[in-house]
Image 1 (tube, helix red, strand yellow):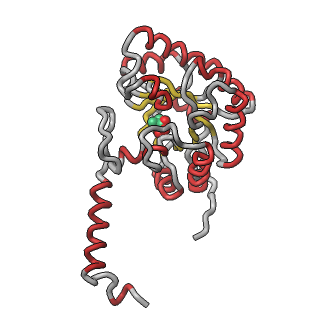
Image 2 (cartoon, rainbow, N blue to C red):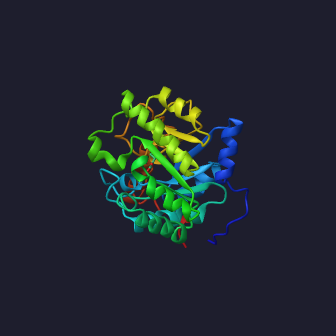
Length: 272
Ligand code: KIV
C-alpha cells in the first residue's frame, strides 16, 4: 500500500481561533497510531492529540509518568503519517519540560523535527511559564493543560474533580490568563466544575477545550479508547461511550477461534 498525503484544507491554530470567534465548537480526540489516526482524520476531527494517555491505553501503565520522549515521538510520527486535515498536537511527557526550560525547548524541537507535529502540549500554569516562553520563542505552538493534570497525580493523590475550592479556582483562572498572555494557542481544561470552565472560556480569547469541564467551553476532547468502549474499567461521569468495541472485538476473536478449531476457516475460497 502506498501512503500519500493529499492536500486538504488543513486545520491550523489560526483556524481554531477563528472557530472560537464564530462560536463553532472544536472537536478533538486522541490517537496514537497510523490506522486509528487515518479513521479519525477522515471522519473530520479538528484536532488529534497524541496524548501521553498512550502510557495507559497503549502501554498498560497505571499513570502517564513512565512514557518517554522517544515513545511519544514514535506515536506522533505514526499519527502524522495518516493525517491530511487535522491539527496534530503531541504531549510533552513527564520529566521533559518541568523545571528546565532549555530541556523543554530541546524536547519540543525533537517532537517537531522527528514526529513532524504541528504543536506540543504541556501541563501546568505559572510553574512551567519559563518553559512555555522558551518553546514559543522558537516558533513552536503550545497548548496548555490545566485542572486535573495527570502528570501531577502523585502530588494530588487522586483523580477527583479539581478547583472546587475558591483558592484553586482563582489560581486556575490566573494560570489560564498567563498562558494566553505568553502566547499559547489553546488550553485543555480537565475535570473541573462546569461553571468555572465556562468562566475561563469567557475570560480568555484563545480556545478552551474541555474534558469533564461541561458544555460552556469552546470544544471537547476524549481519549479515543474510552469513547469507543475499548477501555472498560474507566467510567467517569463525563465519559460518553459511543460504542462497545471491547465486546465487539472480543466477539469477533471468539468467532475466529471457533472457526479455526472447527476447521471452518479457511474454506475453499479462502485458499490458493
Ligand atoms: O493525554 C491525554 O490523552 C490528554 C487528554 C486527557 C486531554 O491529555
